[in-house]
Image (cartoon, rainbow over all chains, first blue to last red; front, side):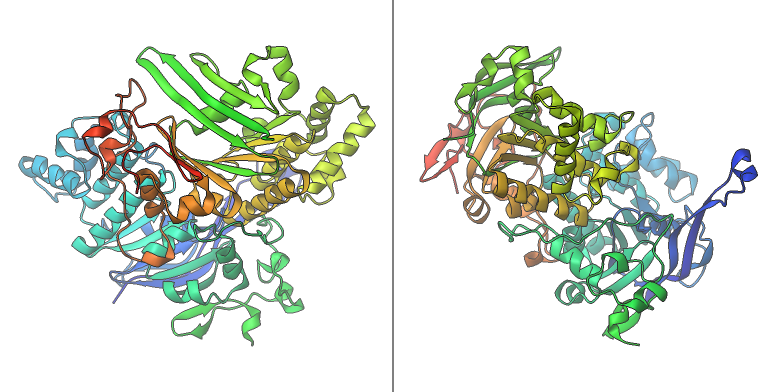
Length: 314
Length: 317
């Protein structure tokens, strides 16, 4: 069953001009952070959203969580527009996303109390249960965030999100700031919670290894657009889009030794002035004249496997 | 002959909370053209090791023991003035954040020519020529034009290339690179790794690549040293260490890397977290997190040689 549906979602950021710029007749700078993105997430799935800096994955995650409004298109949760508390977000930086002046019990307990999920008398036990579920000793709940390590702070952030009984978690680079051994602990916690609570995840990451490990479906973005989406096994064994192929080739792996690195040429273009047609064409080894002119549409190239590339024929 | 030999290096920080033994008896060597991966998690002392080699440790930290031999000559015995002639000329360093290491108010050409003329007796024209060649070598298009730009006009990956180009300017014997690709995207990281690899092969420069990411050194390095709590716990060739780790910590690190083989299965995590280095109790620093720990582990284990490899454990795997 579909829990989340994105229909032609776009987000534009416009930088307003100051007086001097208006007098000089400048045009306002527009960044098309997310450009006409559609996909859906089935209940209980983990969908990995992958892309490099500036591809719009965080903006998309924020629109799903309801922090940003889309400029166009619709985000539907269980068929409607209203998400309430059912979509919660877990942020990248476990240092910046917790209020340093609040005790852990208030960070975790405030939202469920305000929203009437739990009565004040029962709050203590409720917070204890949430902390224990996330692998923290409830006896630490009187402490402040600075008294915890990075991994423990991540757990507090997760406990805070779980306290309002969400159905969908948006994790924006939730393990990127952690050391490898701590990252493994948090990834295991995510999988444990998924089994115990039947959660659905939108897992945003630049780390293909993490996404491959966790996800059922993977969506790859490049400069605001979805270039490919498919079941995880399919995308890692049969990537279709040249960008996905290049990306997968370049992920450093433990198994690859003393390789000759074969980088894709060129930089990621500025989202302020993306290239026309297919955004990837200046770096693509297979670019054809049509790639500079027309935006390729997402087409089915296999069962549940969509790719936006002119190579797949008209 | 080894380009660099580090012998029993000790760098301690004398803080109010106690003595932090950030680097506590580290030894390794690097041959010409060799890439050594120095791997460990936050706070294991890998960055301080790099800084100690170059004499860049600030108070309250101090190198309290050991030797750092560059082509046989002990750098720790040099006066500050002599050390200045080594830094940037015979040993160069590349840092994690190129925005912090490039001067934002100077053009790239000014910074690069300054680095050349500090160590070589050449005129401006020759210095400019060398700077241009260095930028070309790291794959920057139209270098003459780019030399006239300021750092903010470059992207993160380009800035890191400039930093590497500066490190290469004086054809150093050794480059120490401290997490140089951690802040970069995957495709840009691959470009930087490609340049680093080419550089070592072509010029015989030795490279120490400091990182927390085992998969990066897997593809790049010849040998690996794994650090934990200020000490090297295991070293050997990349294949030996990654395919058949001897130290339980190395095994735990490898198990923590999500990889294709165990999709969806729980990762073999290491319990607990790294200990505080303030007044670390004697004995094996890893024993609190180790599944193989026994009574003997409360004594400090010494590095023992097993064939060509070194491991600091009483009960190696």
